[in-house]
Length: 221
Image 1 (spheres, rainbow, N blue to C red):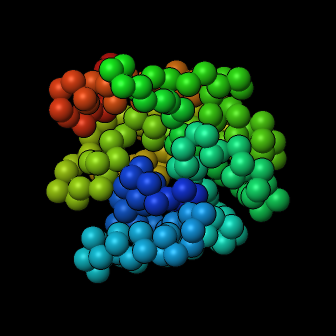
Image 2: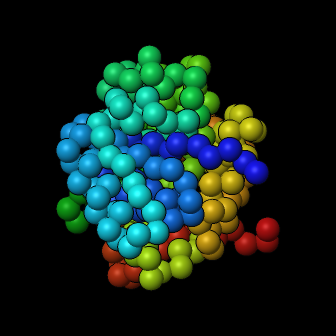
Image 3: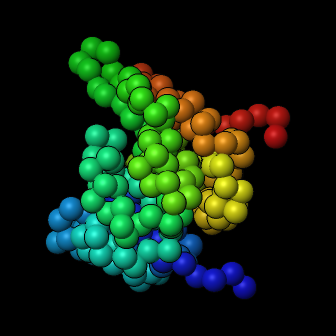
C-alpha cells in the first residue's frame, strides 16, 4: 500500500489549482490549498469541500503554511508570480517534489493567447534554477480547468510529464492515473517542458474559436 502524501497547491485558488485539487481529493488524496491570502484559500477550500458533497474534505491556508505541510507541491500561480513566490518560500520547499503546472502566456485583444518567452527555456526550468535542491516535474498544463471543476464531465486527454528525475516522474504518473480518463505520457527531460507549456495558449485559442474545452491526445501509444 503506497504512503498517503499531503499535496499542496500554491496559488491554488485559481481555476486550474482548484480543479486539480478537487479531482485528486475525490480520488482520496490529502489536499491543502495555498494562497497569498489565507482566508481566500480557506473560502475556496470550503467551496470545493461543498462541491464534493461529503466525499472528501479540503483545507486552505496561506502559501507558507501550505508549503510547510506538503510532501508534494503543485505550482499553480500565474507565471509572473512564480519567481517571487519561490524566492519567498525557497527555505521551506527546497528539497521537495514540485509539480509545475504553469504555462506562461499573455492575452491580447484581437490576437488571443500567445506564449511568453522564458529566458530559462520554460517555467519548469526556471523553477529548477530557483530551487536547485528540489525535484521539478512539469505536468497538467494542457488539461481544461473548467472540465476538472465540473464533476459531471469525464475529463479526457493525455498529460505529458517531463522531469529529469525518474522517481518524481513516476509519482506524477501515479497522481495522473488517479483522475479517470487522463493518461500520463512520458515527455522526457525537463527541457521538453517548453514545448508542452506552449501548447496551452494554442488550446486556449482553439477553445475560443470552437467554443469548447479542448485537450490533447497522442496517437500511436
